[in-house]
Image 1: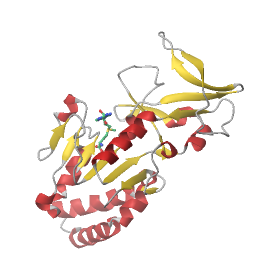
Image 2: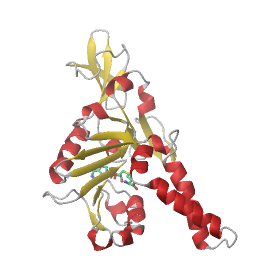
Image 3: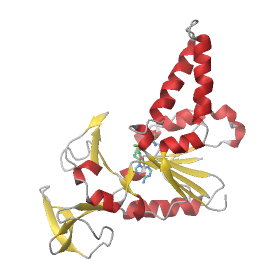
Image 4: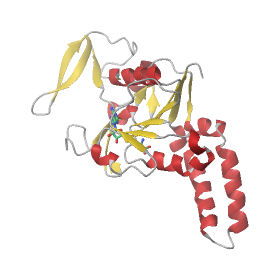
Length: 254
Ligand SMILES: C[S@@+](CC[C@H](N)C(=O)[O-])C[C@H]1O[C@@H](n2cnc3c(N)ncnc32)[C@H](O)[C@@H]1O
């Protein structure tokens, strides 16, 4: 398993906690460009700064990486499309560009992202592994053209929302929802709730609920772990919350 954009390794840690079920079959490589975050990776994880150079038998997984990759921004003007660029004093300036042909019916004033880096990343991951799994906020380019761009370009600082992407440079995370139609066609595209159900989260939650009911009166650690597993399963599959994340998969020869 190669997890790209592993951050501090929160997902890696959770997967490794379940790893006894996988035994020695699981080798977990956490790829993170930030050395400071790599230093926080949990024990049992192999850390790397870049994806492996050569193809391997396994999975490339990216949870909230692709929304973090650089993107362009273009706006529909009455006379055609213009790229939104930034001047040295951090003001927006529009520069005419060729029709990106991504959202023909975009209203004048509508903006869309141009996600070449995301596409290149998926191409590279597919070259490396027969299974690529991307979990992220996603929409389509025409859908984004109809929404205010400030809805789908979001900034985060600490655990809260940040300010405009042109403020606090280097101090906040700039993210952009993933336009799935700009990526190579996926083998499957479903909500996180559907993906987790297909992989047995309801059975896990059922077992945890039973364990909690049996041990609630004891109130020991196992009881508390079981209770939090039930809450986590509910949160991860809540279609109005985390369950609405998209899970895109590319399978080749698997
Ligand atoms: C939101 S975090 C991902 C959290 C993590 N996947 C998890 O589930 O706990 C995104 C991470 O991707 C990293 N990143 C961005 N571009 C990258 C790249 N090209 N290669 C590796 N890591 C990258 C960022 O440094 C950041 O730590």
